[in-house]
Image (cartoon, rainbow, N blue to C red; front, side, top):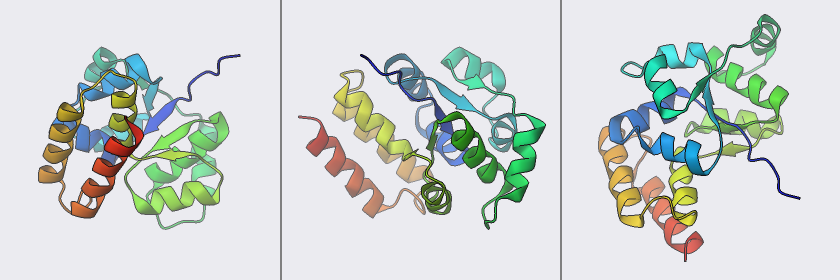
Length: 168
């Protein structure tokens, strides 16, 4: 029996990295891997990406209930409110949190929430035949150029290893 792919909830850093490299990759994710969603307060953090652009890319801007917002305020963590909100929404809905933020990834792991690196989406797209390795590498290098602190050489090397070892 086929399983439904999880909803992928993007945090701000993932949207920013793709905005700076190639935002259209997220449309490929929607077409080939599963639904991509973002909460409105996270979208507000990302200058240059609008709700209308998200709609064109197939990214769903989901409203969050007051109850979930209140839950997010109760999470003990030093991460931002929006990161705690991503955690709470993913935990409640059974979604995957897509983030490159180490602190948010660790928080999600402590709460049993599945995570995915932003670059990992391109590994999955290459495995699905929806993206070439060459294009994935070019996008990753543009990400690194715009965000060298978080997409450093170590991260890029891990991405390239995954790209070549997972995709045969």
